Image (tube, rainbow, N blue to C red):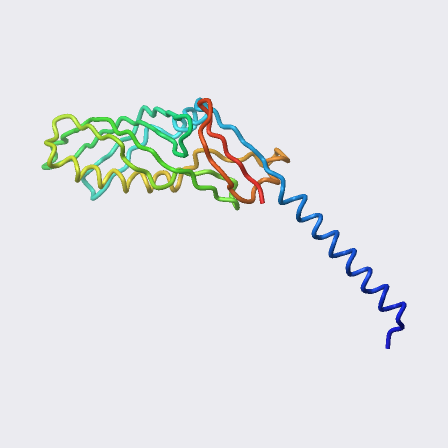
Length: 189
C-alpha cells in the first residue's frame, strides 16, 4: 500500500510531532508563577466585606466586624481575628453578647474562577463577655459553621484576568506559605 520511503517519512513525521509535543509539555510544566499577597492587601479585602450581620433561626443575629489579619512566617494558614456580636432576641428583648474570635484557615484555589478562599477554619480563640464557659463550646460550634459558610462564598484574593502572567497561571495551586508578612502562592501545571 505504502512504499518503504513513504512509511519512513510517516514514522519520521510522527516522531518529530511527538518530540515537539513532549518538549512543549516539559517547557510549560516546568513554569511556575509566584504571587505575593501582602498582609495589608488581605486586611483591606476583609475590611471591604465587613461588618456583616446575618440572622439565624429567626431570632439570633450575628455580626462580624473589625477584621485583623496576621500572617505568621513559615505557616501555611492565614490567621484572622474578628469582633463578634451575638444578639439573641428573646421575648422581644435583645440581649447582645460581644467578644472576639481568632480563626486560622488553609488556602483553597478555584482555578475556574482564579480565586483563593480560606478553607477548614479553626477557631483558635473565642472570648465572649458574660457567657459561662459551659456555653462557649456551643457558640464555638455555631460560629465555626458560620465562618466556614462565609469563607466558602467570599474569596480572600482574586487573580486579575487582565494580567497575562496571572491568566496563564489559572491552573494548579502548588504551594502556599507565609514569608515576610506576605502570603506566597505558587501556581503552575
